[in-house]
Length: 242
Image 1: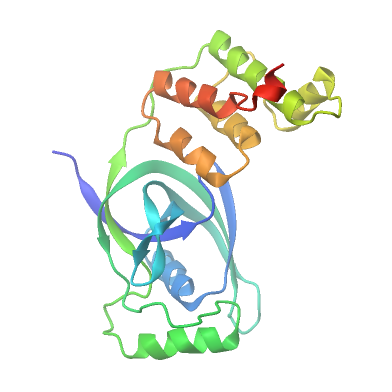
Image 2 (image 1 turned 90 degrees about the horizontal axis):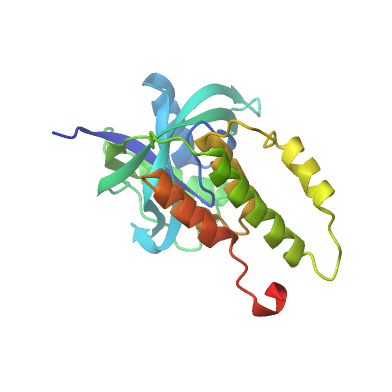
């Protein structure tokens, strides 16, 4: 029987892949509470791409597939403790089975960057029970890693697609293939022994929007991953294909 567990959820406008580093600056009271709780526990929370069509107590909810982030470092940015800087590392993917709503609803005209916004959340939190959380939580099920290896031919194929799409998107400017090889070298993507992490990094280079990366994260087999990479790197503008 598949095991589930309850974790804090941090919806963000990005996709976190396994083994990818993610620095975050924390300033909202609800996410400061999330980090404090994580530091008292196992240091883990879930990162999901924001789903603006999925509202949870007025807040933007998460996409159903995300990645567990492990806090490696946490330090105060301000002397008064109003901001935290954390360093995290992506771990397992997971699927949300059940959402646990936060204890506070989104206040009207809420501005997370203002003192008034912080005070509004703090006032609402004081009315909550001690065991309630200001942040979204979820019961999640871990997703097994893709255990297949990517072949060198598959890797060279998607790299070639990335190069062609990048060259076409730069038109009428001319981009030399050698310049793209330098980009690959800069991101440590020149290799004869590619792994799935190389695919994730290339996807990040080829995407123009975080929503482009969500299907990549959700792929559960190497065949599915390569297919979704091909879709991501396909040139969709007929004028550019000529």
